[in-house]
Length: 364
Image (cartoon, rainbow, N blue to C red):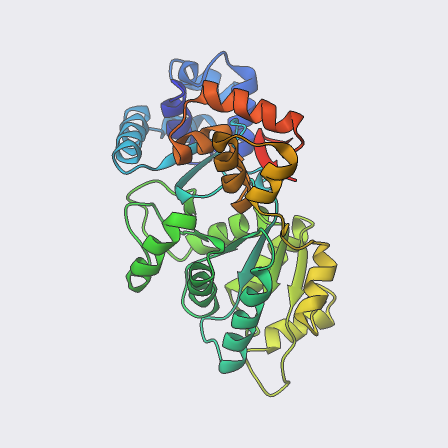
């Protein structure tokens, strides 16, 4: 683990410090550790933070919190990803207000080839449930990751159907990974860990307070290629997510509904105000996204043409399911990084896999 990570986490826990300030600190100082040795006035002058505000900080408190955070993540197999890491979600990194640190648990790539968010009302109707079922049935044809918020209604329906269809699905949380809200969704959250998982910017001991949900929604909007709204009332978190997605230049799609349904008013309004593209069919969505269906070629067929070894077949099988970094491959296949590096190099020469931005490997 990066020796400076504890100091970066601690700085991020100080009031008034966001990702832009973190980046400024990283550029200005020799290390994050140095930040804690500077006098209050120098910190105030260097980083344009009021003297009184800096004077209220408790360095011992945030360092103790960061140490407990790291110990908790190590005990519970939780990944910590800094905005300076290559594995940090490249889509989210484009957003000016992206979090400095992400905590994640599960088995998925932070940089999948295709990733969408599906959101909607907590008061899902039979119409919304049918859309969710048909949407996931269509998405089964593609290698994609589906993101949502693990909330009641559309969110949990989408997560459940992804698990049933073995589609990678990620729940973005508005609290730390030492708890789960709503607790009723714990079972599905555990099932998601085998092909997907959970992600949050919030440290342990953070409750799912009301003000955390808009922050959660910006991660949902920022880490995807597109946001799809199934059903939404005139107000609610789904519309906040769509506003953020528009700000981030993400595509937004909405399923229209009858004018008599209050849970379609939000979707209809988004379409009317040209803040979302209306979907008349699932085929429309796939055409807009420009996706192509999964390769029908099996590993055996690949072996026929490419003469793959048994080890290479295992790698190809994993990368056909989802794009992964070499570290993630190492964990999934229980292979050393050095052996994988050579095997991936051979597979690149055989045009069986390719290296994507962020050191992520994918099949052609």
